[in-house]
Image (cartoon, rainbow, N blue to C red):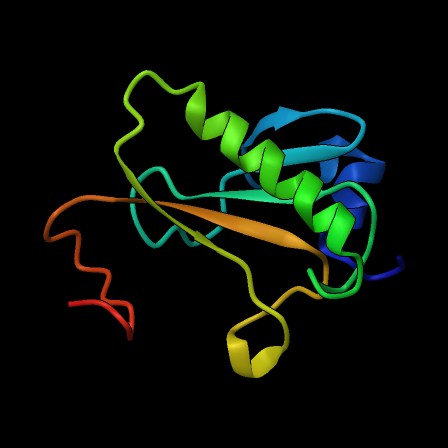
Length: 115
């Protein structure tokens, strides 16, 4: 989709302004421009849909990619898995993606439903 930064990266990996950790023809994992904790990653669908609700099967496939990546890590640790739909829910790019946020005690990230 025209103007979508994730679609632009899929069309031409060289336009990425951040490190691509993993890519297939269906999905990619990249580092966000402003990580909220060290190791924060974004799992992005290769197909442009605005959110998880637009295509639940695609969302399930993307969640499987995210889980497989974390499962493959030697130190799995604790994680938040976050996706958003709409600006009020903090979605800044209208393209299906999942945030993988590694957590550590006292990492400074306070989620509203946390401690």
